[in-house]
Length: 391
Image (cartoon, rainbow, N blue to C red; front, side, top):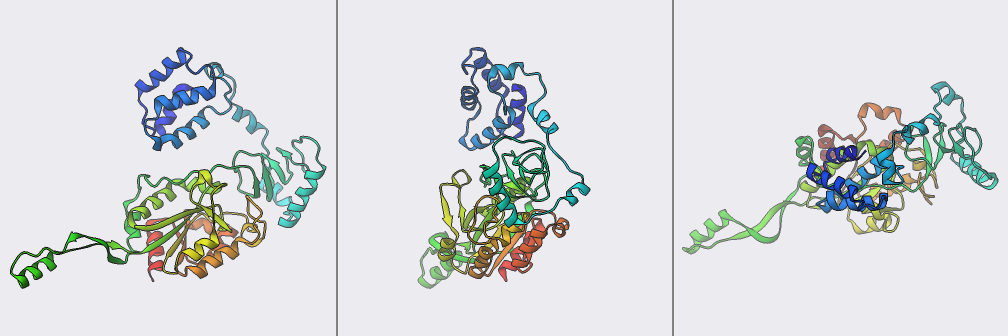
């Protein structure tokens, strides 16, 4: 397990060396972790992480490798079947025909039934079709199967059919230093350029120097501000849930945008725009920013780009309270329309392959709201989005 941990760190591009791994093993032999997973975490982090920028990656790898391990002795001696294998045996999967037979209740009825179940239920249930439980056909619970359900207590999405999620979920900020894949994505972003000379005069004005020197008869050096891309951009980044499958592509676009636009602000949202957004995913519950304040603070000259897969329950777009994570007073559609009205040059970039858009009702709804200004996260798609924003 420890060798697997070392290999996973290397795969996650955390720069650890065999020498550091041997030092960690030696520290375990000396019982410096006191047979505690928490102490081992602190010990391993101190020995293996040399740059604070790698702390997030280390935490993700550590949690995935040692999940379910209560003591270091258990990690050294564990030979039984992994907990994940056993739990999978209890999960419920329905055939397409069985899923088609189950009635979709609608959002309002689903919420009302949940209130009744919470008031009536007194114990744990598994494998049923009514109560809040696990591995059943009930629309409430975890590791079961239902075409339209409220997910409670499940680690992550399996079929993407939940209309609301009753869990605390942790999201990770996009890495602005991510290695950019196709260089042509960066080139595509250059379609949105409007140069101006602003700031301090720090660049030699060769033509001006020559003219002034010729006029005055002595060397007269002229300086001018550097020529910069003056376009102002707001990025709204969908994070968490089904966007976990597109993190690498979104990070590449985010990294490229930061290198191309000097006046760029970014904010995070989940699935659809609502009454608030956030700057840091670690503090998204404590430090929210009112969307209305953004609309009032950033002028109509900003170009606005939403990056997200547009994959969600339609209720999140059209229903008050339809948000998967909270009871939103107004539908997501209202906030998207307000954003488009405030910033007319707005586009949505979708990392899901365009051939799959037709199979998603929510994707079609978002595209309609944006008046079909939805573009694929490909070099050609990004270039088309930049041309639309520059018009």
